[in-house]
Image 1 (tube, rainbow, N blue to C red):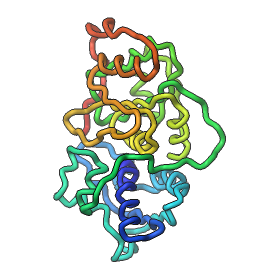
Image 2: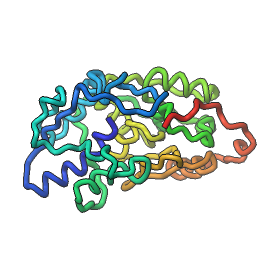
Image 3: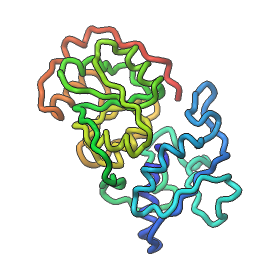
Length: 273
């Protein structure tokens, strides 16, 4: 899902280049997942499951440049459709660089200054959170201790799957944080847009924060640096000390990181790349 969000800037550039007015996006319903052995893919064997499609479609439908979003077998996709899976054929190093740039390189497009490329249609208001967290079980930085958020005495929320929330709560039990189950990417995007800061690792939800150009902090995972925040207010937290320095500035508060220097690193699952 994140790849779709990150590919939209190049879609918009292609529209402009060929003087077209809208995108018809085809998503294969039968393409097998190509994850590394041992990695649990949310599509349960498929690159894009029906559940994933149902989750992201309301967000895509809400974009004025998206004329249609179609979920169908790969054999039914028109032969002359532009293949955005070209980045997976080996010419692009998908373990590094910015995912957005994969498509600009693949199609030889000129990149412009980043600006928001996802707009949110109106919907019922959602709760405000000072810090909204999203953290998948992959791309986890073991040097980052989220318990520091408790020292800010702020309202924190978590978006993600129930399992991701349970893992996060297990790792950081001292932190009072509310779980926000969402029915669509559109609803999640509204929560992000209504927060003060989004904080998360390299996951689909960070792609939403990036597409909105919302104030955001990335949990850096150096072994696979393929998400690079760019534009608007953004930062990258490599350590707990770095996270504190960043949040002090973004939240206009002062918290010391000294108490966390000698704390043992919070338990996390083995990283699955």
